[in-house]
Amino acid sequence: MCINPVANSFSSIFGKLRYVEWLFLAVHMVMGISSGNNNLALSLAFYGIFVALSWILPLDRPLILRQAYVLLAIILMVCANFMGVNLDLVLYLYLAKSFFLIGSKRTYLTAAIAGIVWIVIDCISEIQELEGTVDFKPPFGFVSYNLSTIFIHSLGIYLAVSVFVISFSSVVSAEYKSRKKAEALAEQVEILAADLERTRIARDIHDSLGHTLTNLDIQLAVAQKLRDRDPQKAFQALDTAKILSSQCIEDVSHAVKTMRDSNFDLDRALSNLIEQIRSDRALHIHWEIDLPQLPIATSHQIYCVVKEGLINIQKHAHASSVYFESKFTSQEIILQLEDDGIGFDLTASNFGSGLKGMTERVQGLGGKLNIGSSPNQGTQILVVIPR
Image (tube, rainbow, N blue to C red; front, side):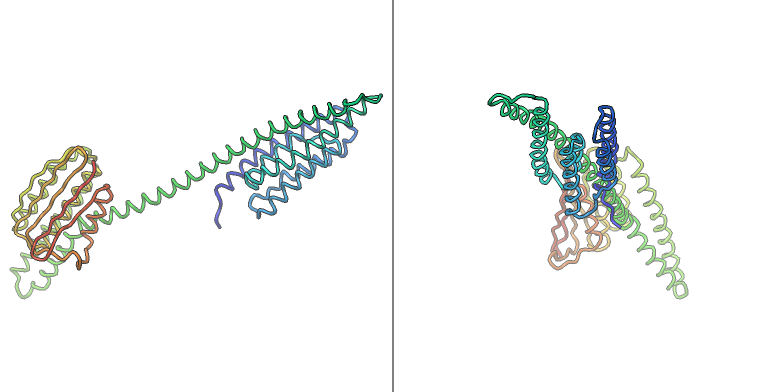
């Protein structure tokens, strides 16, 4: 079942309007009793009808039922006023209700039609009351003069109050709708943030642990196959597996430290990473690192991008030398990574999750990643990230 938050908001508004409506009806009732109203029974009947209507709120009903609800209330008020039961204040309350029930355009039309009928009846009632107090024939123009005065007076009051009520209802409606839209957007942002966090964790697992665990699995499989035929090579594979398991622990510790350490030194971390890769592999690596102090999240993403690029070179490039340079300007961070390996065909290559992860990280920082490569011509990667 889908619940409309805006409808719930309007329900709370109508709940408050209901109490105001009861207050106005009570005030009318007290005034009628205290003034010796001859139509007390009729007044009580109309009051009862409007108390019942206040409980009936077709907020979630089709438009035609909501229009019928407003029209019925207006007709009842016009009839009450024609019969001498004054319900001016309740009329304005129903104009406020109609704004939420049938929309602004229909409310303007309803207010115009109701206003015309209401003012005509008010003028007729005033003239009848005036004629009842005059015991002689008035001079020429007297009735015309008083009719125009009464009309202008009634029209001015109706316009002033109805415009205020409709304007106030418009502001309240817009505020409630904006609040609910903001709440809905906040929920969407929270869901999106959770999705992004899951994506980030997946990338981190792939970049930090995925490669090491794959190599660990390979070494253990080698040791398992060679344990009977060649124990010496099996023990070498186990030694390598032990190194790789230690590397897994180090990767996890490094990831946790990176996320917690507010003084993470990106230059030093990249230098340590390159030293580690150079010692593990027969690669000649030349590097120049010069990066500013960056937010911890940005530094972590850049570190993972460089690490993924170097690991891809280790696994796939068959390169003998690697060049890495990082620098910055006042507007951007620039990373360049090149190797002299076998390269690949950009038009035919199906990028693996490593390059996809690099691209996602760079895009998450608002940057761009360009890859240049061709068979037997090495690979060049350029990353530009705005500061």
